[in-house]
Length: 213
Image 1: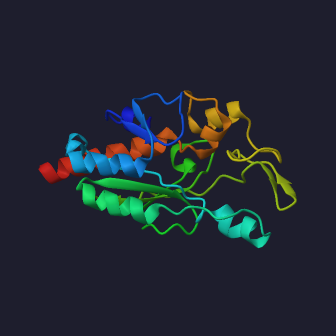
Image 2: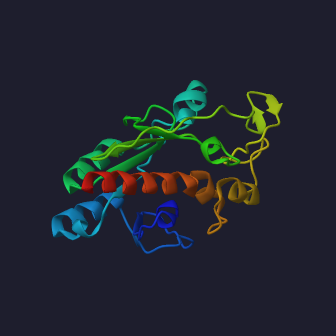
């Protein structure tokens, strides 16, 4: 949605059924879809590619609390094959991952506080074939509301993941992130606020204009 707000026509791909997705999208394996676009030459119709490969193997929860308590299982790490295809496609690209140990360059880090949102939701972005300056990361105004390690805290941000323990309700997540097109809990917990991709899309267009000038 943020890219749309920045002026892009959006074409998506997801292996899961997404009836609430507000733009045209292809249902299927994203790596296979990208490989076909490259092989057919249809990739040339696009200006930039944004990829969010599965990240559970390197996310903070997997390598932190879950690992220490023996929870969880084996998770796919598709960052490397995603980057290989993105390098082959010849287009500028963005790889998005949450905080954790995912093997990406942290060329850009965005936080909800940068946009006055009701979530922190830190996300890292690797930028391929283009660059932009890192915006200032303002000091957080307090805690994320809810229980953590046996302690309950109030704060100006909601926890947009999981259930129970003071986690955000669906309406709270929608309001905190600026998402109106879906009310599916799992989609909201996986989503990034459109303010992030609106900022990235605008920065990309600015950088491209500077190159052309």
